[in-house]
Length: 419
Image 1 (cartoon, rainbow, N blue to C red):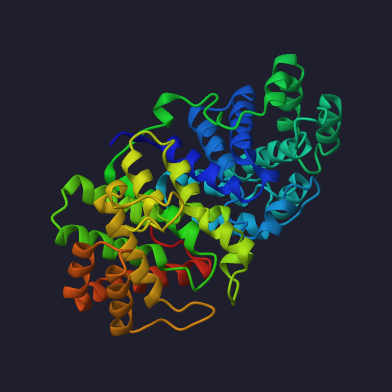
Image 2: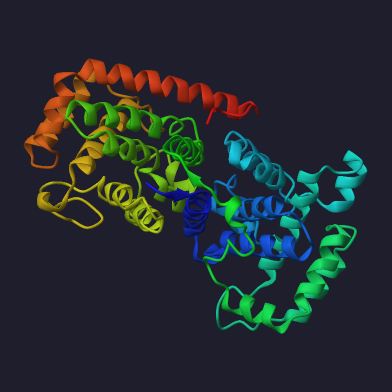
């Protein structure tokens, strides 16, 4: 498994942008422009890389669709989602510098200087992310809208010393003087966040680092509310235990752990308003929710080294009788790991409290899963392994979800959760 830091960051970034056509590509473009402006300003390689990461993840704390769209307004002054993003990102060692930049990416330069005194490096570079984020809000939102380079430059210049550090404004004006720069901006490439990133700043991650980063991603996915805050941790615990029971290889178990953490990655494209709805979803909302498995597959399949994980995530709502989604594929096309993930997901979901019902007891859960297996939806060997040791597996789930709940409570209290 050869996975690099920016591959996973781009995967998360792209998933964040699927929430609305209005924001598609926004995070990757901000990451690309932040790195490029940092290079133009003469910053060090690691600072440039951290700027790229911060730009790609800057709105990770904006959970609701309205918040994401409001952030596209040039004059947006929301400071809540930068703080939330900071709390989510800072627990992963490779994201700590970027997290400080995310925290400051809506803080005006004048306010930063008068309130804090001379800002530290993280906040100062966060202001650079603020500037390029605002640049992207001024670019056309559709191909038929004209690009106005002079208008963009003038708008940024008008914020000099007030919204933006004059050093960053000057560097941007120098960059904007090149016609080639605006040709690239007109193309609005979605995967360009590695502009200017030195190879040594984009390391190959060990399995432990990939797992830790996947857990951070799962917290970003799940921490939108108390009812979903522990879900991915529970699914992962049961899936890995089931995989061991069924004799899966160590390599497959490691990838299954990552798949468990990321199985709901595509839900970043589902507005929090739907996730948190206290009643039944209507037809349109259900269609949006059901897209999450395909979104997760598409995001992960772009990460070299995660092709198996991507397939398992994409299949975790398929049924052996061909009545699942998104592909309605039959048993011959569904991997064992996908079958394990499906059972672990159902078990965990039924055990959890949700806005519209209380969690079920073990007897109810195993009856429902057993019936689904008898109907041809779930794998018999996986279901039998689960039911045969149901109390043991439920204990593992409870232990994992109890830790996840403590992490969520730390997050809600402003304390970094564990990676």
